[in-house]
Image (cartoon, rainbow, N blue to C red; front, top):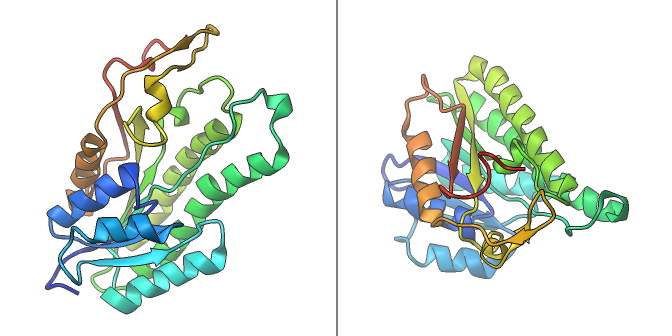
Amino acid sequence: MSGNAKVAVITGAGTGVGKASALALLNVGYSVVLSGRRREPLDEVAASAEPGRTLRVRTDVTDPESVAALFRATTDAYGRLDLLFNNAGIGAPGVPIEDLPLEAWRAVVDTNLTGMFLCTQHAFRIMRDQSPRGGRIINNGSISAHTPRPLTIAYTATKHAVTGLTKSASLDGRAYDIACGQIDIGNADTAMGERMKSGVPQADGSIRAEPVMDPRVVADAVVYMASLPLEANVQFLTVMATKMPFIGRG
């Protein structure tokens, strides 16, 4: 571990918001455990950091053994955990509810909700028992934690559930000096958000292009949330492209 650097674990760290957040946290002095399903994107992120500041761990958050290995590797390498950014997430095909395959529903639930629970559970155990005690967990909620888009029942249901997970973890974490908050992101210009620029379904049945924002804006918000002392918490933070259809959606 480099000096007294704080230690962060980021899931989905190889691309998009996860990558931008990893680079931003490295820039303010964190050691960062880069977690994701594919090794190559994690290697690319790590290549921009000084040796010893990153640890790359291939992880499938839907697999309890894989998640356990991630947090075991973190404590083996750095001895503690100060920040977990639960960022990994997927969507399902944009089809009517009656046509969504059960396996697609389960894949989204397993990744977006159960995977986040598993990571949170391991983080609690570490943060509870370490010295100094405590830490911070930031969950990636999404605008869809508040308001659905058409044909997104699996994604929207899991993101609404993330809000409940965040609130419960925030409440239960008080006993261990664990702060838990949620960042709700709208239209970041990432691989997942790329389709916004070419047009997506609207509530009135039309297809329209939507504005997007640089994912580094989101990363700056994550860094702000992480920068607070543990006696303070950003419970919910919404960061979105200013002109996207959220306020007034529908």
